[in-house]
Length: 90
Length: 255
Image (cartoon, rainbow over all chains, first blue to last red; front, side, top):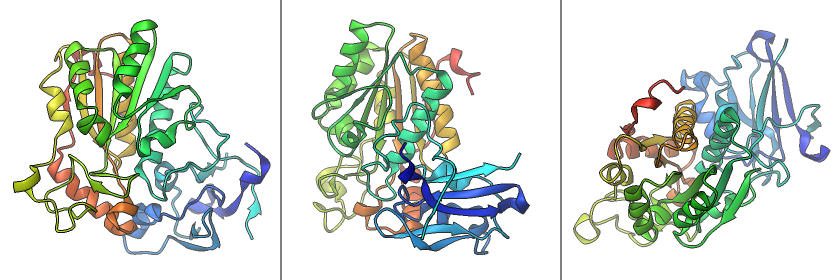
């Protein structure tokens, strides 16, 4: 894996400061499946939403609201291109 | 601008990291299924024993996805190529990866005979109810009334029959003491990983044939967005029942 592929978005303090949320913009294709599957979005709140950054095909990437994200890992498990990584703080 | 991150993407060891983003369309189900299959291979540590074969169609884009020995075969002939490998080298865990065209249309004869002979291999059949690579034509699994390129008024059951149910067909052919036949879905990837582990365990212990049909999504050819894609696959799960059809007694405890 070359260093250029590790560019992306980092959202700190998800899940009440327990985890950091990362998205690799050179892997995200902007399909939006994670937005539909996010359990906080399903409750009617706005957690995982479209970002101002763009992904691989110049389509919008996604970004969570760190206040509402619970770092459950659904988006990480679901992403077809492994573009999302959640790293828990030790 | 995106910032430089200090960590790398979390990929399974059985996935090849060099190509970067996969060749599949945005939102394709193949990416999820192959990632889950690679994690299942990691769990069972089958990297040296596994041979991966992919078919013509969208599944051929997986030719450099895996970090294990791969072979790309022709029009529905993935099953015979892989059981040829497993007969020549008996310790091999053969994985034949195909779409619904390779499994139920052009490759149906090979699937039937491999199931009857109880070949020691895993067949993964990805069912997305159309032929994705050529632009979304009608497949054997297209749902009644579904609009595709070749059925612009919806699939007519009188003219072209009802959708083919792959897992039911295979479960009626196999040896019920040794084979593992199931249907899974990409809506529950944790369960899919357990299913792949059961199927790979069945093959690696030399028991017999494993068949996993996975209901998948195709947002580009279905013309659906992220919300309606999940609604469409829910309606698919009503027609294609998601359950285990044949489970050998030895596999009951595998998690």
